[in-house]
Image 1: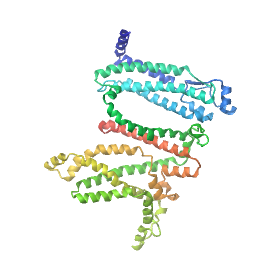
Image 2: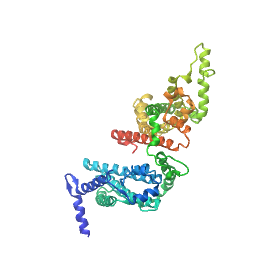
Image 3: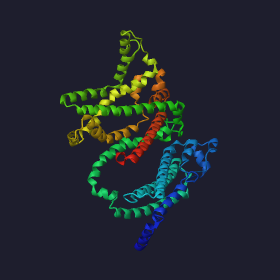
Image 4: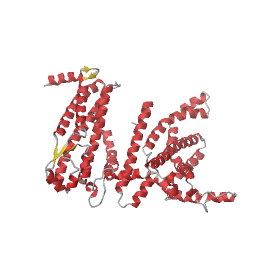
Length: 495
């Protein structure tokens, strides 16, 4: 038996057109699984249809729009058209698994076709292949679990798993075994060890991570199940799991509300906040770092930090008393100098500048602390060497401080881009309120969603849909930006 395994391993390691035979064969198995998971392939069939539809309460008109078999990709259409909200979450989990399987399988096939060599051999390729095969096995198990769950929900055998599920599981398991055997040799060759060995070696460090893992699991990952609100017409009688599944209907209100204008305002304001905010924070951090007087430096930092603690409600009072038409400070000064009053609250052109200005006023002191800490961490010997070479203060800032702040700037930029579709609701709402005249230049997605949801009872799905749209958009922007940065300089990339 051992000799057969050795011969099999030798056959997998054999080169075929510049690639290992095992890699090509496992890629072929992944490609076959990919074809079997396409929408036109049946994974789940309906049996005892008359009794099943009667048990589900599906009318003849609804039944005319339903099929007798479904793939994972269109399983949610059965949930929506059949109004079977109890199956919605499970069907959505299966769909998300399917999308993950497609992503990793296509990535694996693309890497095999490219055949690009790396410093650690094919380890990255094998990790991608293992992820694709493991997810495919999980998808097959989840599909079988959906059949069991649906039959238990309706108390009868109305759903049947297709043989395709077992075929995909078997092919994926075979591909996983091949990849695992090849990866083992590769790890020995490059002196790399796997996760289990790392756990045994540093189990104390991993044990210290458990509280952090539990914290994020409870506070960050489990609440993500609430994303399902975005696809349901939620009501308290049926609860989250049994409320009618409505697909993307909750997203329609975004597209009906002049989405282009909302996206433009939200993105442009955030771009201004991010770029101007970081530049001013860097500028003031450098200025404070150059101050020699200890007491003056502390007082300056405190004064710059204080606006951060001013609540947005107080900011509203401040803004109103400054720009109010009849008794505002600005108009009072203008009339005192013999000028004509400015109607700020009926003139949209002033507000983009004012919103950006007050955002900078509130945030520059807080953001400056991060850059100031980075400057304080720069080795003082670099500045001493520069002074010995005759560099003045401005040359030291240009050639030492600014380049060494670049990694901090890029990391903060990537973090900020994740929320580029999330406007600062408190800032806009408190400064502008419900002044419809200013909506053209001040309305962002958050304020629009707030107005819509406040006028509709039980609009949890609408708010969740808007939040999901913003999160997905931010994720795409962060991944794309990180990819561009990685291509330019891999050391500055976030992941």
